[in-house]
Length: 513
Ligand code: NAD
Image (cartoon, rainbow, N blue to C red; front, side, top):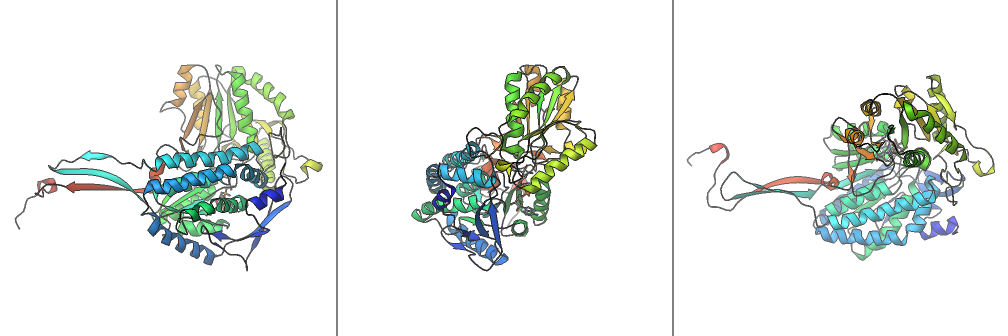
């Protein structure tokens, strides 16, 4: 297979990379903090990247402001044509970009490629949408009057993304924002900046060939301080932030204080309910992938399994046969299902959660170790854990971003299971396995799952771009990607037009001039 050095060269990654790009122009080449990015797969240095300064941030924002003045005047289908070409470029670069995602973040290659495919899909979706940015028309109560509403661009959309979906989250936001006439400033996770640098290189020819104003697609490498600057900045009308609930609360507060808009995609604590009527062949596959896939580092990873007491032992035994044989290792190798955690801090959080939950009375059934030996020398490979626990345990109530699956027993009806499922502060993804219509419909009903995503007979993890993605409660309430999520990237305007020769006033008001 292609050596990493070739992939980096193909994607424009240098030994040391500049701190920002406003499209064709790059800046922040020297005199600053430099961050070394190493692969969680083998601890080898991939490249260095310069961290942006406050002045860099200023330059990026002012360039984006200028770009917006022109970009908003482009007809939306013309903006869609640019997005279509970006989708074509992503098709060309799917293989190297997917490999870099895998190498920099640690997810298995097929998931890296899958992430790039999501970028391609959202481009296709946005192209169609560029001819569909519609509002309602309403009948006026006044004669010879017409009312309708339209959607106009907002301005700068700040995108703050998390390490675990280092490129897809940008595309979900940026492609919709772009066709809506907004300009985007992207602050990727400081843990995975190189895939972001690569994206800017991939799109640059499209920007040049179409004379897209400099500043429509910008990217700035920095840590929380740059994200925080964005959250406080009144020139950024919408901040779309993906990451932990802790981060989202800070961003939401700062944006709210200046009455801006925030779109928050935060942590989950996702559960699968297995009723007595579950098809266990299907369910076990979904549970295993949901819990150990991406080494438990998806916002939609399965963290809690709520099992009816009559099938509890059978489910537990089946899982305990599978877990010890999970293929764990280099995510770029064929046949591997579980790669490393992102860094040693994540390993410590994993071990601490297991320690804490046992102190609360939880029983560790399998896994929970850090793998050693040549292949695992980074110290970031762990064995996925299964713990028997209670929903009310403090540790179970928290999202630990690692492969820990809590088994929770329920007795009674599906409503009892739903109560447990809803009994956490997060509300992202949920699912039920049952072939009984009464149970599945109860789960989907308005007294059922309180999550943004509720699935029947498929797991919690992953989503199609056609649907609106996001969750309730501590997950932040934002929706992005499909359905009508685009509306959040625009401002709504109601227009009333008088095509008569009289001016009837509202509320029957009459006066002589
Ligand atoms: P994180 O919160 O540590 O960081 C996410 C991003 O926020 C980074 O770019 C970081 O620099 C920035 N940031 C951190 N503090 C900030 C602040 N005070 N102001 C502004 N920006 C700040 O999260 P992470 O470890 O990269 O990602 C894992 C978390 O993301 C998990 O909780 C996961 O569930 C969540 N996540 C949610 C979704 C979703 O769609 N709901 C998707 C992916 C990840």
